[in-house]
Image (cartoon, rainbow, N blue to C red; front, side, top):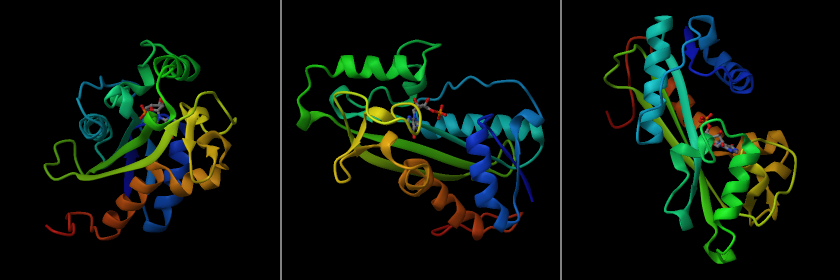
Length: 206
Ligand code: IMP
C-alpha cells in the first residue's frame, strides 16, 4: 500500500521507508504531490501533526503519516513546546534556538533543568479520516549548561541524559534512533499498522 509522508526531511523519509517496507507500505514524499506548505495553527503536537497529515492526504489522495515534535522545559512551563523550531524567531537556526534556551535558563539551578522531547505521530487513511491513528511519546532529559557533541540536530547538544552522562548529540545515530521520542512513537504506530487491513482501523480498545 502506498502512503505519503508529510515532510520533506530526507532523513525522516529514509527512516520511515526502511521501517514500513516489511509491512508492504511504500512511503512517498509529500514533495512528489505538492510543494505547498500548510500553516501549523494547532495548539498541540497532535493537532499540528493532524493538520500536516490531512493536508498531505488531500494533495496525494493517499493515506498519510505526519509527525510533529519539540522540547518542553519544566522551568519554562513547557516552552518552547510546539514553537521549538521557531523559538528564537520565525527564521531561527538550530543554533539560535539553542542559545536562546541556554540564555533563558542561565539562572536556573541544575535540579530544576528537567525537560523532555515529545513527538506526535499520526496516520490518516483519507484527508477527512474521523478515526486517525495517534501515537505520542516522550524522551526525558535535562538542559545542560553548554553544548556537547556533534550528532543529531536541534537541541541535541544541550539535551543531557543523566543516566548515560552524555548529551543526545553524543549518542550514535543508531542509539538515538532506538530510544528517541520519535523512535518510540514510530514503534507504537508500527504496532497499530500491523493490526490494520486497508479499509479498517482495528485498534486495541476500539
Ligand atoms: P518538527 O516537528 O520537524 O517541526 O521539529 C520541531 C523542532 O523541535 C525541531 O526543529 C527541533 O528544534 C526540535 N526537535 C524535535 N525533535 C528533536 C530531536 O530529536 N533533537 C533535537 N531537536 C528536536
